[in-house]
Image 1 (cartoon, rainbow, N blue to C red):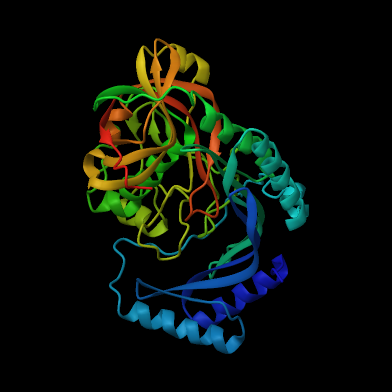
Image 2: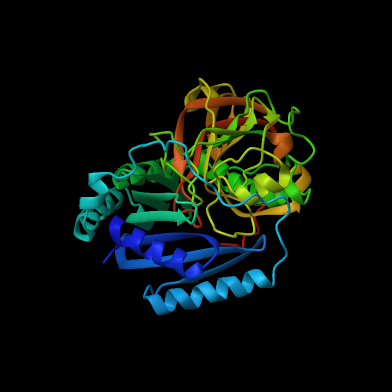
Length: 452
């Protein structure tokens, strides 16, 4: 069964005692269920209860980390020695002043909701069946997943810092398929996502302009990006631009540019785990209280996301963005929020003389040129031609190659409504994004017809 608050803290204290030196530890326990479906049939329902402890020791200024899923004292002693041995073979961290010492108030956002705690696999199956039945009436079938989890997150260190929080999490992914056309919808929430509403959204995209299919020549087009497309880009920016490591090694476009205007004045990107409408969480895994952290503010570079070690190393303020003890990223934004504007989706479409409306991206490679965030990828599951302010036709999946630094300097409109989208590696948050209209996105061709 999932570990309670008291059990987690007892285990953490025992691990810190076994460390025998300055140390911190994280204990994560999760009870999760995922229902997967294809061809409008529920084909897999999987439940799992898991727990893991990670211990980090600081020895002569060097760091060593070890993890385990067994929590008796012999095992804790074993991983403590493994962590100490790793520290002995590591170099001291530059300018490191020690682990977080606490003393600050921790915010108390609501992180756990009853509807996720109460939902059963049978409840989810009934909701999916209702969606499947509605789809069959319109000749549509569905694939995707419906996931829920309850987690207990606890961290502590030898400076007396102890934190604990329970979180609920739900995510729906729906692909609607009608003939050779498809549509897509997804959302994450601390509440239970409405899988039926996602099915309706995906169906709308799969059937929109189904009688009108056109092609285009490659070139720059105004583009309207839905939140799932933007979330793919943000995942890459979180690896190549916003981390402490990418800033320190100079590969990030933020490096050398703090305080300078880099993007459009209407582009603000923050790490914001305190927005109650997003995926709130009160502290990072080093115990630092979460706060609103602008990474890009009105187009101006403000800070990378850093853990305590890299805040000390770089001489910048901690951003409370440590999500992996000893992780190579040394800080990452897991609650990335893009500020919205005042428009609606309909207004963005109506304002477009000739453009392309994109539901999501696929096969994105963000490593072409990190200093300009040059990326390439394809569109998928709903790509539409806009002509004279109206949706004129469906388009095939298109390939694009685009500098995101350039693109985010060319934002022409943002919706006030935003959608939270998850990522496979992110159990704590996701990306909160509006629909974006961007001028001159570079489309370079069609996806190879042999690609899925």
